[in-house]
Length: 217
Ligand SMILES: O=C(O)CCC(=O)C(=O)O
Image (tube, rainbow, N blue to C red; front, side, top):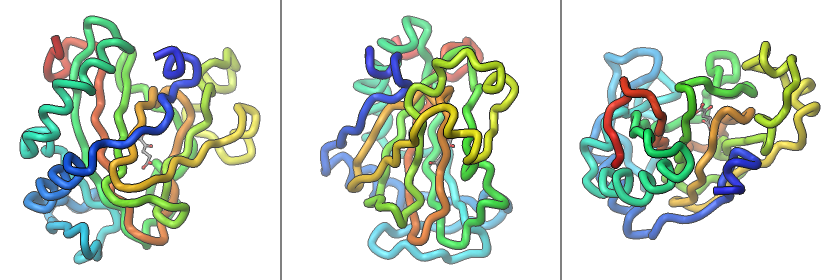
C-alpha cells in the first residue's frame, strides 16, 4: 500500500493461470463493440486474435456481470486492496475489457497520449493483460510518482506531450504474460501505446462516491 501511495503504482503481479483462462473463456462468449460505432460487434478468440471489422478498438463493459470468476475477484481480493487504498467508502465503479488491433492510430486515440484521469474524488484502477504483452503489443506506460508534484503546469495540463513529460521523470513500460496485473492510481501520468500486434486488457475501476455502483463492504 505504501508503494501505491508513494508512486501511484503497485508493482507487477500475476493472476493464477486457471483464473486467467476462465476470464478469457468468459470473454469469448460475449460480444465486443467498436468504440467508434456501437452498432458493430464481434466475438474475439484468444487463440487467433483477428480484426473482423472496420474499427481498431473493441470493448465490453459487462464482464463483471458475465464472468462469475471476475465478479468473485472484484468482491474478494480486488475489493480488499481498493478498501485498503481508498478507505471504507471504497466502491466498485465499472469494468472494461478492450482489444486494440494494429491499425489504431495515435491520432484518433487519446489514450495514446500522456494524460491523467479525474474520475472521482479518489479512485484506483486494476489492470490485467489478458494476452501476452511485449513492446509490440501496445504496452501501458506510466511515470511513477508523477502525481506528487505541486507543479502548476500539471494542474492545468491533464494531457501533455512527450517533451514536457520528461519534467516528471522516466517512464516505465509495463509488459508481461497473460495474467500480468497491477494496480494504478491513474492520477499519475500514463498512456497506452499503438500496437503492432493486438492487445487485450481488463480494467476494473474503484472510486469513493455514492453514485458509484456497489459498496464493497
Ligand atoms: O490502454 C492503455 O494502456 C491506457 C488506458 C488509459 O489511458 C486509461 O485507462 O485511462
